[in-house]
Image (cartoon, rainbow, N blue to C red; front, top):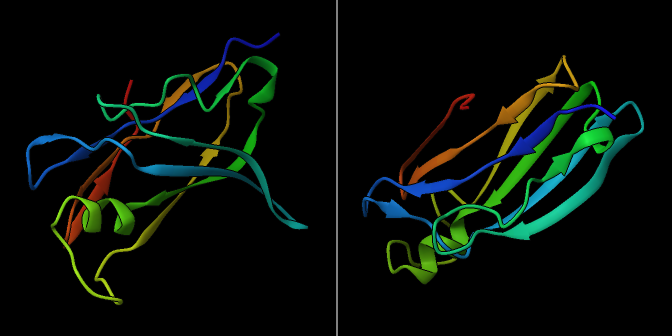
Length: 119
């Protein structure tokens, strides 16, 4: 069994607090297309209750996390209307070492976002 895992969290930089209730979907990207692996929602701390992938479930390859930021921004009162500047935010990343820890956080506001490889 590999010791790797994939974790994430979401921080609302406009309000300066964790983003609770953000739906997150995880996909593996293959030549055949997107394979949905998991779906979860962030807790009160803006984190998932468990890693998105752990152990042998994490393999070398390309992945995509899709954060439903628009629904969160609407619910928090920061965005209104049918068309938002930011709605679903996809983050594509590669996993070259299945035994490593990959932490892919999202920092959001109604008009900007950023990510990085955390620890």
